[in-house]
Length: 316
Image 1 (cartoon, rainbow, N blue to C red):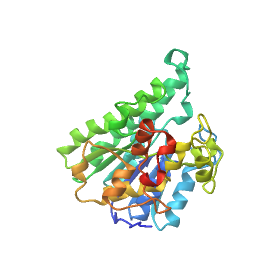
Image 2 (image 1 turned 90 degrees about the vertical axis):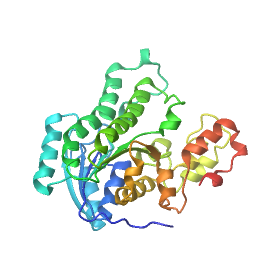
Image 3 (image 1 turned 90 degrees about the horizontal axis):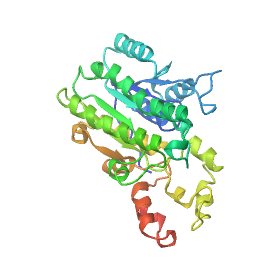
């Protein structure tokens, strides 16, 4: 397995939405590489998340410090402009700069699959739009002035699906489709505004993320997911679906983002939409099991050929 620790010593990072999944892994990887990581979320001891899960922002900070990093956990509602501004003011007062901003707040708790727009619960749809997009916009509005003061700043907007994939694929519900594609466009726009200040903004998507929530939703574990997925080859509507064989842990995304932050040539990625696979291939990185899943290519290939004609090993 190839996992080179990047050197981000002296860099100041803010990871918004770092309680679990990709955000937690990114915060942990940045801390392991030497960055001072301000990690935020709303889930804290005694106050569970919207999805009712047990992970907390304090737990993320403990993982960072256990890896030898420096973490500052902060409970923040990123839909509250005043709270976000207070957070950035605190970073400015304590650190004097901001070098890396990762926006990873999702809103998946409000997704209602299988419903057309006119049947979708409007409050849930607007909540998805707010938590999945508005939080990113409010955080960037408050933080980019500080980040742009010094050249070399990096903004990462975590999305679902590359720009090339999403342009020709409907993402199952109107609210989800608009939210995820708008976040990509936000990174594109931020990159244009940061370019004159020596900054870089990119949207980055994982492949099929094998997060804690996804494992639980499919009723599998990190030890059983592969066998369960392969057993459903050729079976429609099976759980987990066969396509889950191409899934990846949050670590591959986190390693790629850490490498991007440490790359002196990162400006070449400005305004782009990239996948965890592209970043891993560029820096010769791999997932925890030593593989390098190319989920988006695999999913496209499955649209063209029966599952029986594809070898998942060709895409890992």
